[in-house]
Structure formats: structure tokens, C-alpha cells
Amino acid sequence: MKRLFIYLTAIMWALSAHAQYPTVNPQGLFTTADGEETDDASGGQNAPLTAVFTANPSDVGEYTARYEWKIFEPGNEQSPLVHRFEEDIDYVFSKSGTFYVQLYATFTRNGETIDYPAEGEENPIIVNISESKLEMPNAFSPNGDGYNDIYKAKEGYQSIVKFKATIFNRWGQEIFSWTNPAEGWDGKWHGKTVKDGVYYVRVDALGADGRKYKIRRDVNVLTGYQNQGGSTIE
Image 1: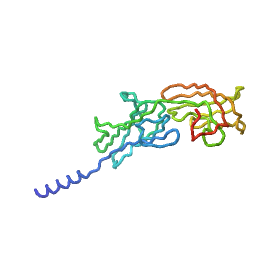
Image 2 (image 1 turned 45 degrees about the vertical axis):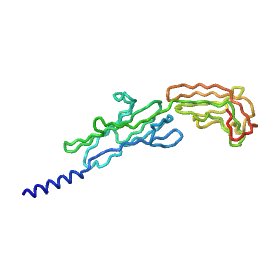
Image 3 (image 1 turned 180 degrees about the vertical axis):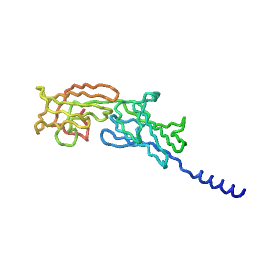
Image 4 (image 1 turned 30 degrees about the horizontal axis):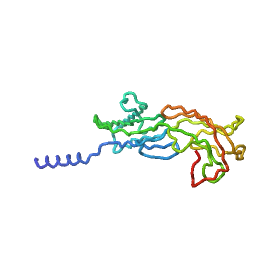
């Protein structure tokens, strides 16, 4: 009888040791405004940044699962920007700063409850959105040589969530407008490249940090400009 008890105890211990309990593996996938994807947004990203957060549960079996997501700024977990209860969520970050994304999961079965994460073991996904920056050049050379052919925002612009630029000629006629800082004006009007001279650009934009841009400046069209080693007209 004693041997049987020891044998049964060993079996129960073995089954317990190999029992699989439900868990989650929260992850984020981020898509920038220009379509690039990354799984790490902690190093500073440009807004708007589209995010999809997934719980990735495993070994749920017969447990009933409950998911709770919070997106909040440091120190403001009780006033989250997002508080949702789906397994997977999406969100567009359009404000600069640091944000925490925390998943809480609860699995229940026959009175047993398993919580993730355990108290004091929170490990949120960190998202950093950079402050905004936007500058426009004062000249370009739409001559088809592959350099400076498009008038657009200077390289290095970041976290611009709203944008509109409009080109006018010297008589105040609107020639072209666009709403994406990655795009621009090819120097054409009615299908033909405009004459060299001074034009005018008006830009109204909004940064993720709330900064408003109202850029008003001359634009010099220089089709006769000969590029020297890929230099950029400023």
C-alpha cells in the first residue's frame, strides 16, 4: 500500500511538473508614414506611427481568457489614452513623447485564476515619438538631371501629422498644392516646366508636439543649374 501511494504521488508530481499553463507574449508591429515596418519603437519614431499590438496567447486550452490593454504616458496609468479589452488592438500615435503599452491578461478555469503579469512584474512595450521638424528649401532645379528635380520638404523632417503646401506664381495664381511632405512639385504647370524665376510657397503644417508651422518663402526655379557631384540646392 505504501509503495502504491509513493507511485501515485510520483505520477501526480510528474503530471504537475509538465502541466502547461496559459500565457501571453505581447508584441507590437509599427508602420511609419512612409510604409516602413519595425517591431521596436523605443528608439524614437516619427508621427504618425500606426501600431498593432497582439497578445499572442498560448496553451489557453479550456481556460476563459480576458485581455486588458492600456496605453498611457509615464505616471498616468490611471488616466490612459487607450483602455480596451480585445485580444489585439491598433492605435495611431500622433503626439510626441514617451508612451507605455501594457497588457493585462486573466485566465480562469474551475475557480483557478492565472494573472499576467504577476504583481510588480509589469514590462510594458515602450514607444517614443520624436518632436517635430520641418524646413523648406528656397530653390530647386527641375531639369531632369536626377538632382533637385522636385521641390519638397528638406530631408530630416519628422513627426509632421498635418501638412499642406501651395505654390503660387508672381501674380498670385495657384500653380500646385500637395498634402504629403514626402512628395512635392515637379516644376510643371499645365504639363510644362515653368520658366526660371521666383515663385512663392505657403506651407501650413502641424507637428506631433503641437507645433504649428506657417512657412512663407520665395522659391527660385533654376532649370539651368548644373549639379556638381550630387549637391543639394538649399
